[in-house]
Image: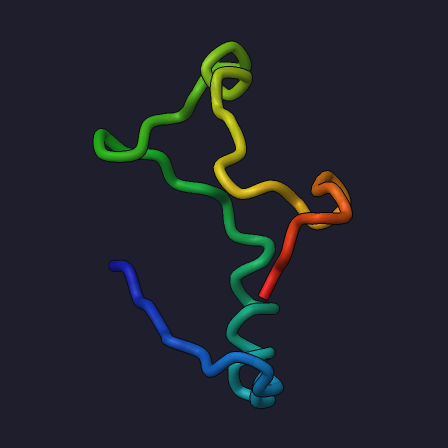
Length: 63
């Protein structure tokens, strides 16, 4: 089962949210037919769509 939450930007996590995240961090990744495990070669083919801040030039605006 997939559960999603929409968090408001710049709002600190509640204690309950932190506990849920802590409980999930050690669970294994479960691959399936919709999201199969990828090989190292497949992973290398991914290209970043949005550059990281440290990779962007000084003229790049982030907002």
